[in-house]
Image (cartoon, rainbow, N blue to C red):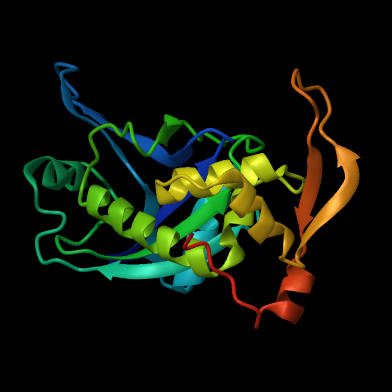
Length: 244
């Protein structure tokens, strides 16, 4: 069995969208005193682990993501490396590492990835860990420097969302224009004029209308659309810009 690299890890910021808010997947980090049962640590972290000696960063990130979601071929992008000298030296972080049996180093460099998932359709694989989606506006206490990692990932997501069609990764295959607009408003923290937004989207050849409407909704069913990556690749020299 391959050994871990003691001072190099991968942390994944897994974003999900539920048609209402942007969420991030977190794992509870809890440590109790073996004798008294007193809780020594109780906070949350991003999903991550050390890389193994026989894998690269992309492989490690995909392994971590599949271990929680069971999914392959999910959008993953490396966005930053975090190597502050004392990034894992806070008292509770040092205590946590002391209780692990894997032989982690006292100085750990982590490579950050962010992933985009439609979290309304994903069944999490808990693997004896408490794993939950949290709205990015209602975060619990985070361990290590994971608050900094999350903020950097969100900054990168917002930047790319304006210039590349990565937002469709957060939606189901078929979506309405209202759902697409809500996604952009939530992630970018702004409001779009409904008419202008729809006009811009309908000019995009890769957003294809279907002869199909929503089903099982209480309001008037809206028309459904799909995003065609193939058409986007053929026409991506055209400007993609949501800087309204």
